[in-house]
Image (cartoon, rainbow, N blue to C red; front, side, top):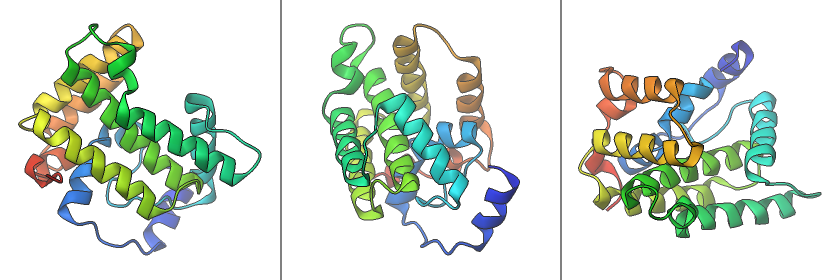
Length: 191
C-alpha cells in the first residue's frame, strides 16, 4: 500500500468484521500481502486503490464496459463462473479437485474485494459471494495449512509452474504468529 493510501486508510471508518467475514477474507490473504494491503476491511481507501482495481479487473479478468452497469454485470459473471466451475472444470484431472477448489476460492474472494474497490459491486453483494465461498471451501479442508498447500498446487497447475513469491507469502501466512491465518481459526468460516 502506498504512503498516501496508508494515510487515507487510517482515516476511513470501517465497520468491524465478524469472525466469518474475517475468515472468509483471509482466503485471499496471499493477494493482500503481495499487493501490500490489509485484511481488516472489505473496502478500498483511495482513488489509487480504485484505479488499480479497475486496471487489474480489466486486464486479468476482462471486466470491461462503457458503463459501471456493464462492468457490474461482467463482474457478476466472473464471480459466478469462479463459484460454479472456474479452474475446476478447465483443469479437471490436472490436479486434485481440492487444489483447484482452493485456487478458485482464493481468486473469487480477491476479485470480489477488488470489485468493491472499483465500485462495480456494493459491499452486500460482495459479502454474499465471499461468505458463500467460505461456506463452500470450509468442509474441504481441516485448517489453513492444507488449504495453503492446495492453493499453491492449484496455482501451479494454472500457471504451468511454481511461483517463488507466492510460495514465500503463503509460508509467511502459515508461520508468522501475527498473520491472519494464525490469528483466525479455520472453523470461523461460515458453515
